[in-house]
Image (cartoon, rainbow, N blue to C red; front, side, top):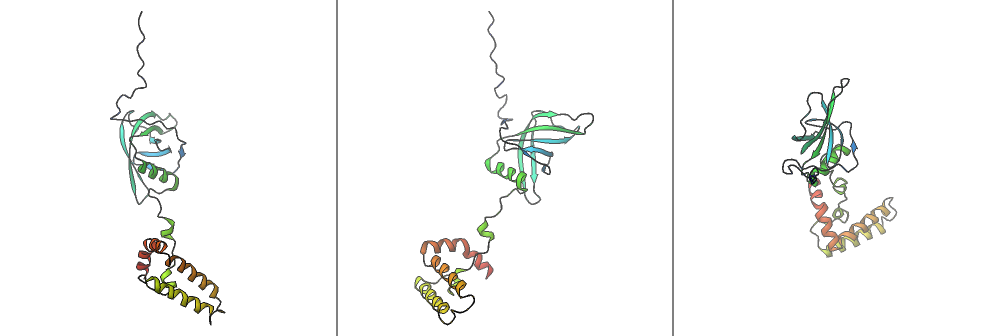
Amino acid sequence: MTQPKPNHSNEKSNPDSCEFIHRTESRIETEQLACSQGQVADITGSGMRLIFPKGQLPEIGEVQSYTFSDGSDSLEITGCVKWVRKGSAFSRQAEAGIEFVKLDPESRDAMIRLAVQGKIKEPRSRYVQIEQADLYKILAVTRYASAEQIDKAFNDACNHWNGDNADHPQATQKLDEVYKAYAVLSDPEKRANYDKRFADQHDRAA
């Protein structure tokens, strides 16, 4: 009796040349995203569907480099052609399914960010973009003021806005700024964190 031959259809034929990753994620439909090889119809973190002019389809199994750009930065991704679909007699477009090869997490995030936000690089942190008040100027001391000098400056500022200037329209606001500045600069740990984040910014603005 002849024994049935084992089925090896699920084995990878050449993992070194083309490592396929199944697209199990939700696909992002795109309208304006393009790469060096064609227009992107939809994309995920593991693959994409490309639209080509008819007659320019790649071969199944072909490994290609795909370059994306947002006008300022570029990103190069390697992919393997998994399937092709020729255009009909009524259409000049043809499609190919691309699965990315050994895509690192950083490049994956940049590519998805480009598809969703239109930018390859992540925007700078919000606290860098928002102008932060110079706490040293509020207390009228330098960045190198000692703890004693900061205490004295705080007391002087409180006396100033609680004394003859108490009726000033901005007295309440000024006192609030003084208290907040002192709460940071009088605490060694908070002051060190503040200096690390904002000192260079204030030096450039000075």
